[in-house]
Image 1 (tube, rainbow, N blue to C red):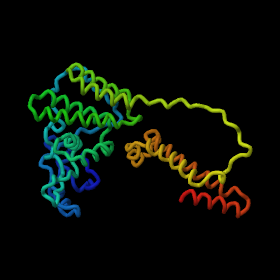
Image 2: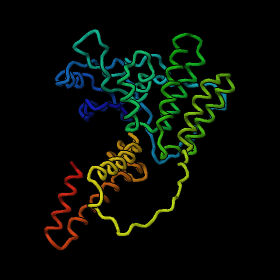
Image 3: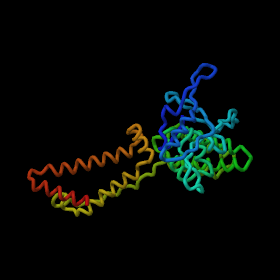
Image 4: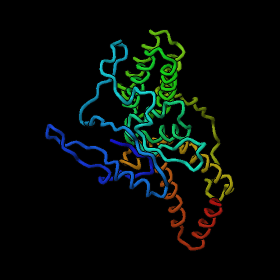
Length: 324
C-alpha cells in the first residue's frame, strides 16, 4: 500500500500487473506512466522514488498480538524500510521553485513515511501533517509497534547516526502516545507501551521511561472535576423567561458552552467521522453536534409556540440580537 497525502490520487493506471516465475500475480510500479502523470500535474515537477517496497497485506479480521518488549529477543529479520536511516529513495518528492528549500513529500509507502517523520531533515510541517493524518493508513497501535521496533534497532547500533535516529524516533513515539484518544486506549496498546517502559527501565534509561510513562498516564487517568458546591437558592417570585436576561449575557453563556464542547474534540475524531461516521470513535464530536441540534430545536420551539404573530416576532428579534 502506497500512501499519498492529499495531492496525488492513486489510480489503477499507476500500477501494472506482471507475472513472476511462480505464476502468481504481483503488483509493480509503472514508473513510466507515473512520471508522465506527475510531470503533467499542475503542482509541478515531482521526483519519483528510486526504490520500491511491497508491504504485507493486513487482515482486519485477524486479532493482533501485542508486542511484549520485556522479552529481549534479537531482531532476526530486520524490516528493510522501517529500520533504514534514510527513506527518501522510497518517497515521491515535489521540487520547489526555491532550490534552497528542501523538496516536499507527496507520497510513498507507509513505512517510508514513518521513517521520514523521524528523520532530522524532516520538516516540522510534514511531521505535524503526519501525526494528524496517519490514522488514514495505519492504526495507532501498529504505528507504536513500528516506532518501538525502529527505536530498539537503532538504539542497539553503536554509530552516532543510529543513536540520533533512536532519539528522534522516541520523540515521535511520545507525541503519538500523548495524542491517543480514549477509543484507542485498548488493553493491548497499554500493555505494549508499559512493557516498553519496563524495557527502558531495565536498560537504565530512566528519563525516557519516566517521560513515556507520564504521557501514557495522562491519557488514561481522567482528571476528576472539582466537587460541586450546592448553595441554598431563594426561589424567584416569578419564573424567568428569555426577555429577563440581556442578549449579550445569553450570547456569552452560549459561546462558553460551545467552546467547552469544541475543545474536547480530538483531531482524530474529525478524521474518523469523515471516513466512517462511527459515534463510538467520535464521542466528543457527537456531543457537540447534539448540543447544536438541541439549541436549534429550543430556538424553533420558542419562536413557533406563541399563538400571536407579534409574540413570535418578538422572540425572533431577540434571537437575532443574541446572534449578533
